[in-house]
Amino acid sequence: MNMKKGLIMTAALLLTATSTWAQKQWTLQQCIDYAMQNNITLQKAKLKNESAQEDVKESKAALLPSLSASTNHSVGYSPWLDNGVMTVTNNQVNSSVEKTYYNGSYGLNAQWTVWNGNKNVNTIKQNKLTAEQADLQTQVTANSIQEQIAQLYVQILYLTEAVKVSEQSLETSRKNEERGKEMLEVGKMSKADVAQLSAQRATDEYNIVESRANISKYKLQLKQLLELDGTEQFDIVVPATTDEQALATIPALQSVYDQALTTRPEIKSGALAVESSDLSITMAKAGWLPTLSMTAGAGTSTNSRSSNSFGSQLKTNFDLTGGLTLSIPIFDRRQTKTAVNKARLQYETAKLDLLDEQKQLYQTIEQYWLDAETNQQKFRAAQATEQSEQESFDLLQEQFRLGLKNIVELMTGKDKLLTAQQNKLQSKYQTILAQQMLRFYQGGSLN
Image (cartoon, rainbow, N blue to C red; front, side, top):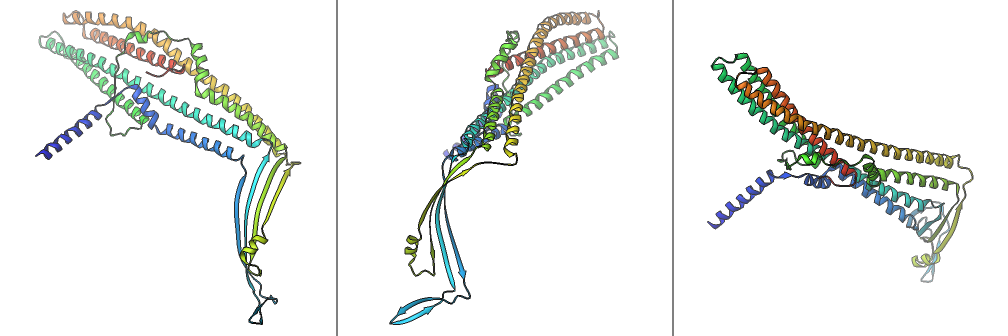
């Protein structure tokens, strides 16, 4: 009996946990944190960063000498060999001819590049710059994903409130339709007018369905950025927003841009690319300089035809070698000059790429700043328009109830009110989004 109760309690806990997970609502920060850990594009960028770090380690190891061991074993056959090996056994002289013989060699070899125009040292520097660029590129990818998440999140918030407005409009349409049917029964309204009221109610229902479908579409895109399974339930927290948020002071355009130049990873990466290209010129010029390398080796060998023992041969044939090699380029068929010229061209390209990144950054910030300024002005105007249209529609409804206004005037007033409400919502959320983006480009976080 106790076991049965235990199973029931366990099942209840599992159902509660499943229900809790299914009902989980994600905040913007939770979406961003989860995406930073699970987004596939970002994970790939991190792997590229790790690969670049391995290149740095390899270039550092290239400063050390290399050491290798080698051994060679071969069997030979001399079919016309006449001379053999004389041996004395029990006072008798025996002669044997070994036509098949065995050779073995064993060696250790070391090689070290002493100087190659500092190309190896500059390679380390360049690989470090490349690794820094890879890390910055990871940050660029992370920033891009955060921007996309914020844009989708705000779009969902806007549509969620827009649905509420549409639902209020639908409720009004239903009341007007009911009122129209009552007036039809007493002969104060025609069937055509009632049909228009019904059509208005159906249009409001359609708009709600369409808005909800768009919400589902944006939620799906948000889930894809978070790499959530398509079957998982997903919803977001709808935070309380105020008109004061949309009316907050917008930072100056130049101030945002100046701060972004010092914090944005794409700008830092462009500057590193210029520095790396400058190193490439120095490395290419090293092709005109001599290269000094050092070699050393130790080796021995054995032969089966020798009368000495295996160990004696290893000792007798053992030798040590060492040497210096100086390579001086005289004529390389213009290879070095071409490499230098190409490196210079790449350097100029890197500088232009940096300028282009700065230009793109300014255009992006300017667009967000214009969106913030324009939508904030629209929001102020929409506030007054909504209030005016609401008062006008309330009066129209009363006049329509008394039979002083016709159906066309009522529907026109309702459409104007709905448009004013939607315009206010849209400008409000567009302003909040643009303000968040400006702060984000200043180095702040999205919230």
